[in-house]
Length: 103
Image (cartoon, rainbow, N blue to C red):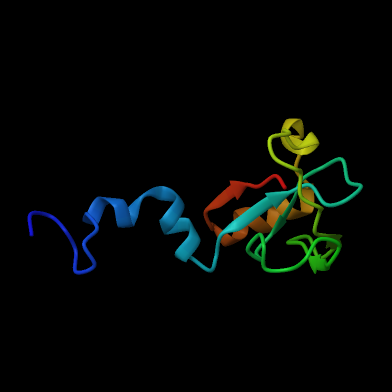
């Protein structure tokens, strides 16, 4: 089959960075919760809970999942880079991969 897997997709297409992260359960997602000015780390995959649902961040604080930004607008949180100190400390202890996620 010339490099194609069993399902007809090239092996390299099955292992790009985004698909590898999507399959892992230990990824930390850096989000800006509703009404916050800093990013918090969560382990719940984006889309798992509806907007407004409270989840526990790595620092132990309850944070609310933000509401989505309508396409083609850029999320207002895209420019926020400051991360919660408590979440950063826990993230470093875990050694998990992470990604920034804006809604």
